[in-house]
Length: 437
Ligand SMILES: [Zn+2]
Image (cartoon, rainbow, N blue to C red; front, top):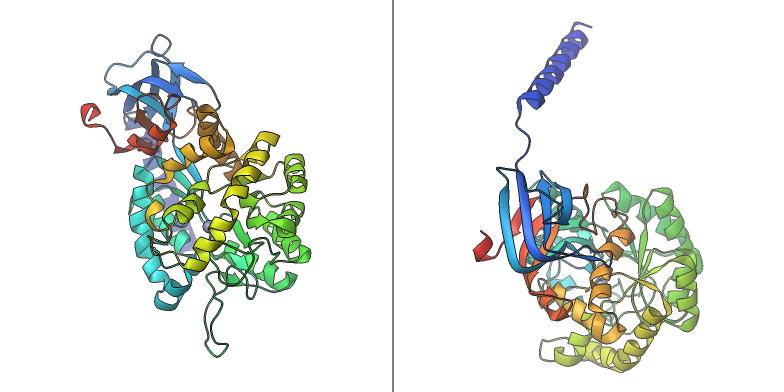
């Protein structure tokens, strides 16, 4: 009892001190950012903008005529630049750095390697202007640990939405296949068979910190011996994943390239189809009806086709990618032109980390998106898919100050988005052009 009373007194003292400190503390310094142009993220733009930032939030947005820069504010002058919301990559693999096709890395490396790679890749990704990423599955909950280290300020990196291990079936894209049954090999994800095991793994992932659930619904490009359109989870397993994730307040992202497996994932109610390479007309109609996002990961397959062999991608994977490349462009464009919602995702692995912004150019070339539409896909749409559009996705008063600037006008040349000259995350500057420092 005496202890309790002492604790209560301590708590009261601490509260009083905190109040006194808050009363005395000066208001957080104000930063004013000027640029030639602001692309808001919702399809609109403001010329000669001023954005005020206080602490981690945006406190004013408007034209230079509308927003008065307070006396004493730090001014960042991005003359000659276009300001945009922090970019969002809805499909990354920060824990990967190898070119050897995944399977062999699984034989040689541990999640500890992934943690070190992720530390390097997280900084590259942030410096490319990507202030938020959705990690698409990692063993050992490395993505959770890296997310927490970034949140604590131990290492620089984007805001990470972690998946924990991806859920896949025995012999599927998340398994390591083609080896002797006498070798005990872990999967590249969590191997689950049947609805009960799916539910158990969803609960484990949420217990250990996952922000969303990643499932593998069809075969893949880099996996051995599975057709890309082959369904790998039953409707029962897919529904169990979505239902259990929803019960725990989580969305599901589904790796799916084509066919019945893709359609089954959409019908189960996943939030996004990732890759979607050969999405059918039937699936397009169903995705439109349900508001399912398509995250097309354009750069990865284009690069495997064009320089995969030179970069050491295994021949079976280059062959799989080449076989679908032309038809993929037709099907993804059809989905975009039909009005399916898209979010930007690169599937960043190996040397794509830090080059995430090149995805914008492919969205214009392959989907037929305008540069402005591509920017909305890479900002507001990503925020909506991740469920964070109250705080991110547009440059709006009250939202978190995640801002990027590129030289010139990206509406004239979308490839400019691959070269971030200024990056701010939560009001802290990580990259600035020499003239603005
Ligand atoms: Zn992926």
